[in-house]
Image (cartoon, each protein chain N blue to C red):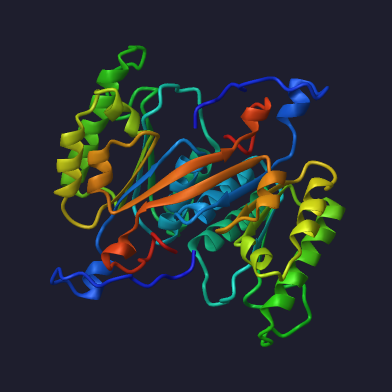
Length: 204
Length: 204
C-alpha cells in the first residue's frame, strides 16, 4: 500500500495530526473473497503496533476454527511472555460467548448475536480495546437481530481512540454512510465456480 | 468465510480430492484497500498450516517496512525455535534483493523487477515454496518490466503444489484469465477523500 496524499483538505478545524489520528470505522463488504482475511491482516498490523485487539466472530458454527485464530492467539501468548506486540482476545458466538454463563447448547442465534453486541457496547464505553474486529457482523444486522441504528449511534459516538472493522456481505447503507473507510470485495472469478471445493491453508 | 459448495461439477476427470488440492493462482486487484492486507492474512493462514512461504515485494522504497513483515519474520523465528507453523522468507526489491550481489544503490527499477521475477522462476522450477506472495507484482507487468506472457506461461506450467498470490491494481486480462481466483477490491469510501492521511496501525 503506497503512502497516499489526501485529495482535499477539509474545513473541519482539525490539525493534520488530529485528523491523521482519528479512530476509524472500517467496513469490508461485497460478495468477493478477502473481507475477513484483510481484517485479520489488519489485526496482525495492529498487534505489531502494540494495540489491544478484540475479535468478535458472529458465526454460527463453533467447530470452525480458522488458522487466524491459532496465529493471533499465539501472538497474544507471545505478548504475555515477552511484551512484544499487543494483547488479543478472541471471542466467537458459535461456542457461546466466553463471558456468558450460558452453556452454549441453546440454538437461539438471534439472542446470541444481540448478547454479543451488548458486550461490545459495554467494552466501547469502557474503551477496552484499540481495535475491534467484528467479523461477519453485517449478517445479524441484516437479519434484524441487532438494530442498525443502535450500531451506527454507538459507533459514531464511541469515546477515545477505538478503531472498528466490520466484515460481511450486504452492509447496510446507514453503516456505509457512517463508516470512514469502506471497501467492497467483488468476485471476479472463484474456484468454486469451476467445481472446486475450499482447501486447507487457503480457505481456513 | 463460510464453507461453500461448488456450483457445478466439472467434467475434467479429476476426483473431488484432486480438485480440492489443486494449487491456486490468486489475484487481488482493483483500486480499493485490502489487496495486500488480504494476501498477508492468507500468508498467516498458510504459516499455521506449516507451509513454506516466500514473500516478494515489488515496491520501490526500501524504507517502507510494514507491520506484516515484522510479524511474519517473528513467526518465522518462532518456527525456527519451536517448529510451530512454517518458514517464511521475506524479500523486497527496494533495498536490493537479498540474493543479489548488487549493492542496491542502483536506481534501475526495471532491471530489479526483472531480476526478482527471474529468481521467482528459478524457485518455482525448484518447488522452493508452498505459497508465493508477489506483492504489487501487477505494476512491473503493467510497465513492461516483466513480460506478462512469460508470467502466465510460467505460472500455468509450474510443477507440484505451489500456490501463488499476486496483488496490485490493473491486473492484466491475460493474468486474470489464467488465475483460479480473482478478487477486485473496489473503493467505496476512503478517509483520504476526506482529507485524512494514512495512520500507523491502519496503513502500515
